[in-house]
Image (tube, rainbow, N blue to C red; front, side, top):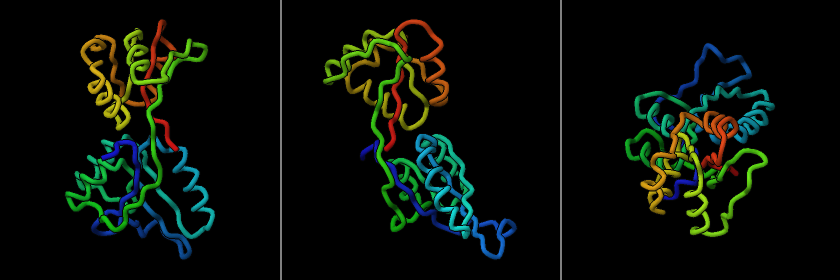
Length: 193
């Protein structure tokens, strides 16, 4: 499973369309999406809504929360989540496999405050050395944080960095830490494309 792949799934079951919001020429779609791709999805929604025939009611949250909300019974017409999350939803018959489409990919980025010395990240060993030199390493509770934790484990960095790791709620909190705390504070986050 590629944790960096994102796709959309068509939920199984009754449509979430709310007829009270419909006009003669407008249909409303409910979209539940991972927040890390909000900017790109919002741009597509704006283009889609220009047709005047469909309005999109979008809700953005972390990828793990998207999966949890659908598993708890929340309904949506379109779900955008990680491949891993969509696989779990499909296994539980919460989305239809025939409606799945990969809509983007993410990569891992090292974030630091403006003006900080950029570490050598040219190889796995250089990345490992750079992480061992940080004063604080932050990542979020979303899918990028889950992936960051796996990378740290695979590189044997979890134990040596344990007291320096800070898991935060979301990307905004991570960037707040990076910009407000002194020293070599870095974050691990997704880059979407």
